[in-house]
Length: 296
Picture 1 (cartoon, rainbow, N blue to C red):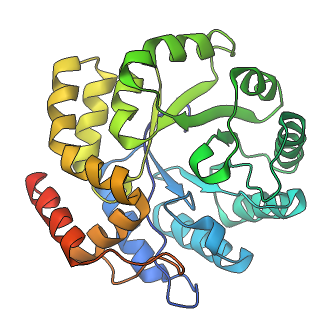
Picture 2: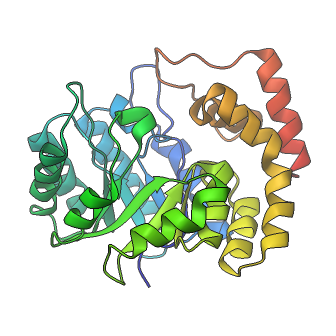
Picture 3: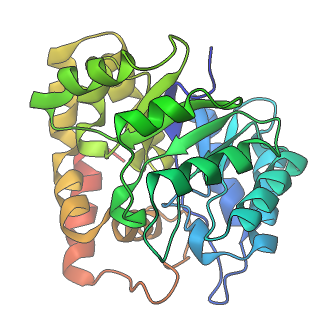
């Protein structure tokens, strides 16, 4: 089975105020994910604040993760960077540090064209033996992968999966089917955007790349397993229990919410990297109530 399937749990990367990774706190989060039985760890994704970390700290995080769960839970590492040569270096670092796969986003300042993104991805795939997943995250990168570009990248050796924002449930079947028709049968199509991801799995997606899974793996796994089993009623029942959190995600951004939730659960005192500010008391109260509703 592909490592790019099932519930991929994306934890935060706890750091101090100067961006040094707290590997002890990261280990606490990772052991929690392993104990729950997640299908993979998505390390240094957007929730893992990869863009705010130096190359050295990113490598330390990968080494800590591989040392904690390596060989038991696949570790998929984000290697996005502004420059192609830096992304290539990060992919090499991830492989040397014990990663099982890499996740590449087209990070940019100057808006990129499809041709530029294609060559960026091909160049990174060429320097690693690890399987690579396309990280389609337009809300942060401001680049959207069309089906044509995904299909073209699927022909590049080593590029084996795509992670995209989940479509609205009313469009999920049509969009998943349209993309699948363009891709090899073994190319893994997965989704993020926690509030719609389970519906995208019901529609044929094979992976949920989950922010909340990195913090609350047990209820997230229950939702994913219901989606994998095609149990529509159970998916919608469980998804409703998450709705207070989904509402907070939509209002404040999932990153701010999961940092506050991690603090409330006593898992870490780490705060988001500046200039991102922690949420205030009112929002933290709402998060606490949402966690209580999930028996977290």
